[in-house]
Amino acid sequence: MKFSLLTTIVLSVFLMSCKDKKQPDVVQEKTSTFENKGHELVSNMVEKVGNYHTLLKKKNVVYTYTYQTPDGKADVSTEKYLFNGELSYGAYQKHERTFPDLEGLMEQGYDGSNYWLKHNGEIVNDSIRLKRVAFNRPTNFYWFTMFQKLLDPGLNYEYIGEKAVNNTTYNVVKITFQSNDEKPTDTYQLYINKNTLLVDQFLFTVADFGVMETPFLMKLQYEEIDGMSIPTKRQYKKSTWNADVSEEPWIHVTWSNIKFNNGLTQDDFKK
Image (cartoon, one colour):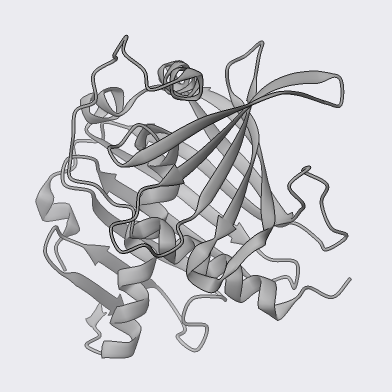
């Protein structure tokens, strides 16, 4: 089944918009004061998977990131993040989607101040390629910490109600982002499992690309790793606001070999 090029572009813009939601480092403490029921449900979910304070205590993470599109192309990288400061590094053993014209090892990083790129150990100072690095590094970091960041300042929560999907009952919560310039912002709609408190799936829009009426559906599978529930398997494609998906094939994202507290320092993120 042919996969829409427009869908690929839109999803890329969604990922890029994620990095724009980066907030200053905040050690989020559990609170008993909530804006509304939706806020409380999200807070309980974050406590279930592990909050940002839990991540900071683990200091850093190393894992294998695999992004597979229906056309058979894939990126496979070894990702390293330092949670304090949101430093990020990726060593791409396969990069059929990111700089497919480069052969061999491709490394990219963010050292807290600058983005950098290496190809087979040599520094690359191409401004166009560095813009792509400035997209990839915070985006991949955001994916890994997304649930924890749903308690950042500047978010709005709305409880939609209960909904049954395949004999499972969910609390549905709508999340939007406050805008200071009156521009449209992304919308998330979380399906929080009433029994497990985990988000089994969520809908999202891509405001930066003008895609507000037709959302995408992301489905998640979790693993318990070092006391945290990590959504290590993801698949997503076009949907409706009733979570009825299109007939397009899924995009698959997998995180594997996850290890926390690896003794990384800021020097590990310098070019």
